[in-house]
Length: 220
Image (cartoon, rainbow, N blue to C red):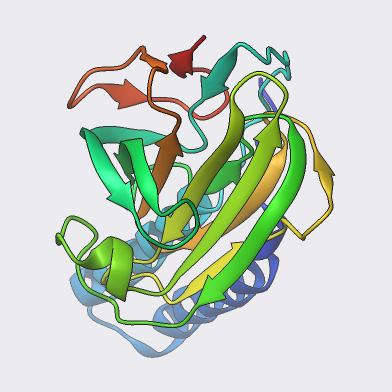
């Protein structure tokens, strides 16, 4: 049987959820005589705990660094592939690839390339639904730029959604990072945008399922 691990960002929530679930199960058994009400509450509590556990799961994936590839930073569905003007850091045109995460996806963020962190900034903001056209500019988000020896500067942006209430970012200016390693976590949301140099060969298609640290997003 494979060992299931959970992300450290979920430790407190998991402990609280376990306590709540145990409390509901024991109290229902003690104080509710009607069998169907008791079982309904107990099953609902267990389902709640399962949802929390699956949300914070952190599957271990083999690190195979390849500087000729940009890998998916998160699990989810590719919802945007287009040339856009990136206004915060590059202030020029880039290829944008966006991955949307549903609540059932793994929400660990991984570094898409190896290199040195050149820029890392947190922006407070709104909590529009992740697919909203303005989410990338108006929602709570972090912008991180990693300089890679093959691709040059690659920007990825963690974006909160309607349910996300906290973005965790481990990247700091000047840090040397390794492709595929843990870069952060988005609690209960939502989307990551990649901004790549024009001329990058995009290896994914719209609506394709992406797997963090496995799916190749672009190559040189």
